[in-house]
Figure 1 (cartoon, rainbow, N blue to C red):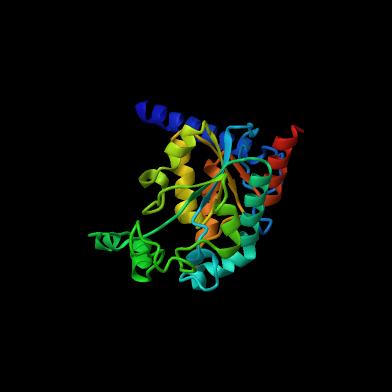
Figure 2: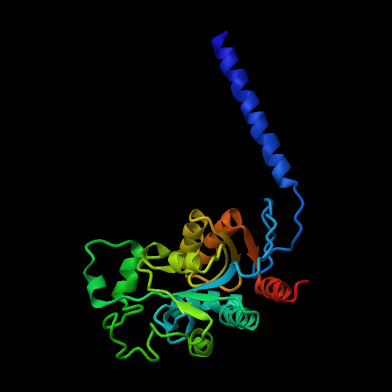
Length: 268
């Protein structure tokens, strides 16, 4: 008798899960997919996001040569993804829209100093970045050799980053903003909504999304304003896109993001 009861309970539970899955799979989507290559959208809820004047900011992770320039040390693995997504141009469009509409811009960069190379253990990509000298600088107080280096900003972004409306935070050291002052700077300005873009999708960008959400921010990821490494059998961008869709409050393309930013300014 007890065995039959247990089996019946399990059957009811599985039926409930199946009904839940069916209800999700048939849920209508009110927006087109943000995937750069038009991949069909996941059948998941799409929270309504309304940008709020004075409470929204653009956050860009690692807009630096080592990721975004053909001369950068990672171009051999990220270049195809950056090119296919139009990442460089899309980040540029976001910078322009933010500045034109008085939305503050925060840049969360990645720098390594000599003492960072003394770490006793590393993850796989940390080890790779250290081995290839990615984002290297001689010290926090020394800009010798910075101009045009892999740690420098992409040249076309410099007018946007060297701008009165842009805050450059201290560097993050692994992937997320837990080791820099991004959250502090956002909180001090009363920001609770973040439009997130930058490099690279499944590392720093995704890690920033996760931590900012844990800190209580509403995070919108701009799907075609990021990219990631592709190696045989593995695509970092596709891995990140799944998590963006599952976790972010909003997943937009650049055209959608710019339109929302411009509508915010005009009050439409």
